[in-house]
Image 1 (cartoon, rainbow, N blue to C red):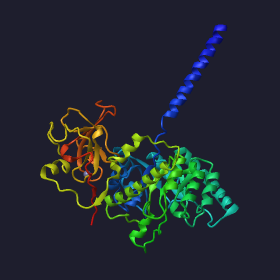
Image 2 (image 1 turned 90 degrees about the horizontal axis):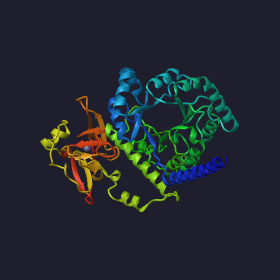
Image 3 (image 1 turned 90 degrees about the vertical axis):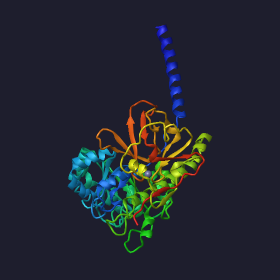
Image 4 (image 1 turned 180 degrees about the vertical axis):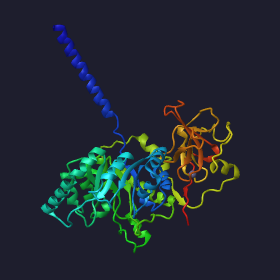
Length: 469
Ligand SMILES: [Zn+2]
């Protein structure tokens, strides 16, 4: 007995020492960096073919697409023509997902079939609008919201069964119009399958008030539109003025807003958004132009997020981090619109025709200098010298790319994965998994001729975006 008790005490002490060691270790580990989960709204490209839009998902830092129907887009209708199976297989091949279907037309009470379709396609969110009297305030508003939610209950059964969340967007001239309506909705919603699609565009343009709202209703937000009112979405105003809806273009300061999203560790979708005055038209005149505009807003939101981190006093930045941020931050590469760099016949053979350079020690295969590898055709920063390693395969090899710079697609040979420049689609080479060369277990095998090396300290030329004239 005595021994057992001693053993028990000793073991308890050991357990408690172990527990505190674990706690210390957990505290020492930094909380993972907060990121917005971007989803791409198909209607930003107007009625463009959905095949042309899917490759843009990764290029806009998104992992999913939101299919919009007419009149804003036509991609939901295109899905009918393509067929569910083909659509699913293509979206999978691009490594992205169908994240949302927007269905105002059907309204909240007619989503049964749409929810079942969403389930078949692995889509977990449908956005629609509320139904009920407009212009309510105070207790009437609360009752109005409660009525609406009551009417939603039979539909929520299907939502739960299909694993779909119905996200109700706040909208002008609607039951769900005001800050208060969103608060009541959050308080009254009985199910995690009935949530909010938050549209700052339709709210009074007050960033601090929006931030407070986000802190209050955070757990009920399934979709956040990075979208401000600007001057509205009227056909009568210039395109320039219409674009003031985009984050970073109009006057709304998104810093408090993304800061609140970060505080609540928001996990829902973020959709960079605007409505062009003429519904159904793209927000820019080419696919690349639309992507450029979205990325411009995404850069702005990243800066807002960075500012919000810097204003949080407990955040400790080690001097090492700072040094890394100042030198060669490729995400800050400037951008110009224009024509791509001219290619000589050898370059064109590889970059435009998926050719392959002969292997060997030439080109950049043996280059070890610190610096950045950019795209020969469009100057986009592709790889850092830090990620380059010696693979002895005869081509320059990297185990990582600069974020979003490189797009993967199935090679026509049906076996390999081709890598192309995300900006200009120029052929780079192939990527292989699992050869075990480095810890990341990834090898980008890149043709030297597809790249240009910029030594550390030398200026990186701006990335060229081709925009249709
Ligand atoms: Zn390029």
